[in-house]
Length: 187
Image (tube, rainbow, N blue to C red; front, side, top):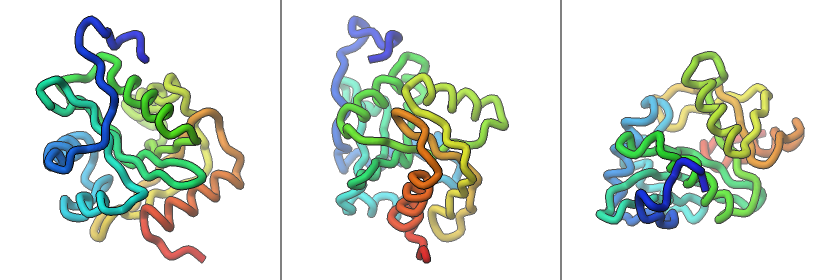
């Protein structure tokens, strides 16, 4: 648990699988938190909930407001965080670190995620946040394919929990993401 998230300030609840009726609120937070090329249109994103490998976990307030959500693809060999956002009303209080910690405990395997190259201050801060939370930057060339028709490919890096990965492991992760998340035909 993050030292910034005080039990005395609020009752801590566990992250829990998204309540389907909350998808619209999660999608609104997704739209506020990510550039449009980094998420699917509403119906495509919601349809993923029927895929057994895909789940969205939320952290709720007592009044059922969504503090944060984390969307995860859980595969045999690793898990992939596709989206992670903290509601602006609840930022800077350690909730992001708490949610990541809970997810890592829940999954008990290597977890990876995509980040922008450290070319801007916000990208460097985001990478620093993940590094403080036990993720490591793997500086192998990686291009996120278009997430949906009409979206653009984005140059990113992969971060992994626990340690950096060697190039062979990186290529396996990349191949799985391309095939299972982005639905690219690989040769």
